Length: 153
Image 1 (cartoon, rainbow, N blue to C red):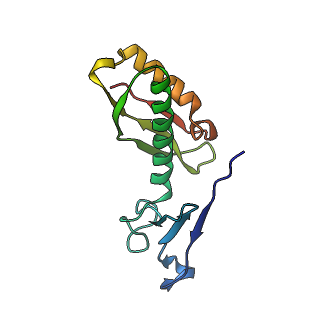
Image 2: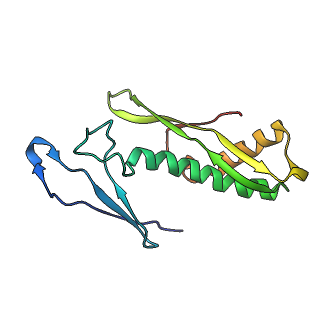
Image 3: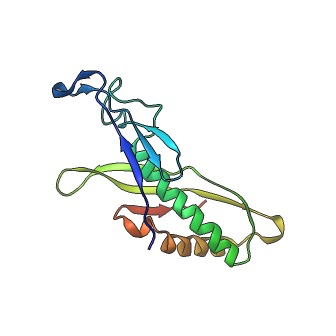
């Protein structure tokens, strides 16, 4: 089976650690060599100890779910004979308290917008079925307990 790696690096550079007044900025480096600036979410740790220009774990979680669904959908649509020429998704994750009082990303709402070659656009029912099959085949969706909703257009 495949293995996926990420190197996470943080170093204390300023502020008082014991008081929580230190930067949460760090980096994520992936096996292909791409490094992404990351930080805690400003909604969790206020600026200046977080950086809203960086990717935060919650955003990355939503992006991973949306990206996985898209990749699965492109394959499912291809196998069904449809030619997707573009795809966008304005995905949103929402935080809530769990039954133990802890915060978690309780739901991710995907709003996919595939565009097809004019000669082969699926019906609304066919497209909904393609999304169901894509969702069932998405590795990330199969790995989390967050509710994932594919909103109809």
